Image (tube, rainbow, N blue to C red; front, top):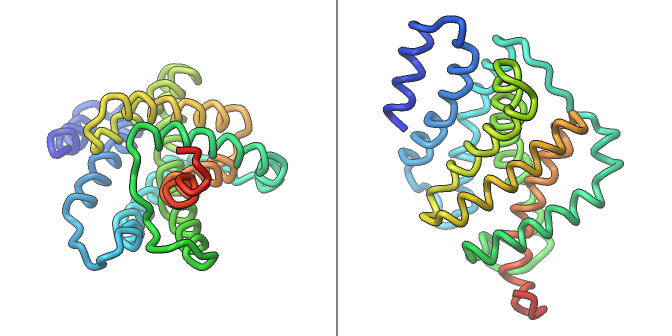
Length: 219
C-alpha cells in the first residue's frame, strides 16, 4: 500500500494527463494505511468502523469536487428497488458468510443493536466504499477506457481490497459482489441504492446471519 501510494503521487506529477485517475486510485492505499494505523479505542469491533472510514470522507469529497464528478443519490430509484435490493443483499451476504463465517459485530440480538449496526454499515462503510469504488474509480476508469471496463476494473480492486481475510475465494466473491453493485450503479445511476444494498449486505453478514441464521438452521 505504501508503494502504491507513493507511485500514485509521483506518477501524477510525471503523467499529468492521468492525474485524476491516479488521484482517485491513491484513496485505496490511503484507506488501508488508516485502517492499519488506527489505535483500538473500543473493545467492541463495531465502533472501530467509524474511526477508520470517517477520515476518508473529506478526501473523497475533495476528489469529487476537484474533479467535478456528478454523483446522484436518486431517492426515487432507491425507494423503488429497496425491497428487491434487500433480497439481493441477503443472498450475497449468505454466499459470503459461507466463505468467511464472521462472528457477529453486535453483542446480542436486539432492535437497538441492529439499528446501531445498520447505521454504521450504511453511513460509514457502505457510503465510503461505494463512493470510492463506484462513484469515483468506476467512473474514472470508464472515462479513460469504456463503461464496462470501468465496472470490471473497479470490481477487481474491490475484490483485492478484501485480501485482508487471507482467502482467495473471498477475493473472487468480493469481486463478484463488486461487479453486481457496479452493474446496478451503471444501470440506475443511484448512489443511494448501491449504498443501501452494501449496508444491508453487511447487516445480514455481520448481524442477522451469524446470530439468527444458526437459530433458523440455515447456516
